[in-house]
Length: 73
Image (cartoon, rainbow, N blue to C red):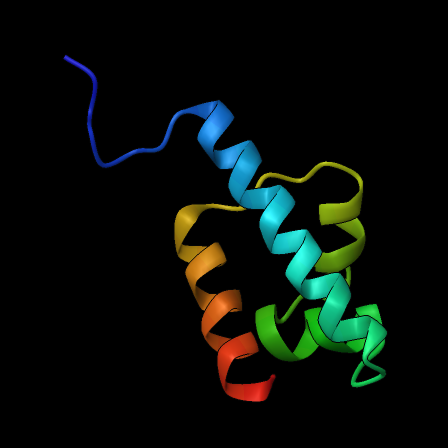
């Protein structure tokens, strides 16, 4: 039986698209560079660059970034 708590690959891909869209909007508002955002939010200056190249974040990562954007946005 499939674990219902783990999103399927297609759902994770959709989360990544929406997450990247929201991060790009934040960056385009002039608040941060991609490297600074990744370093401050995830401790990884490559985070945004990796998302752009297809990295699939875990659900916990998506929630962490969304929470940051909600507070900072």
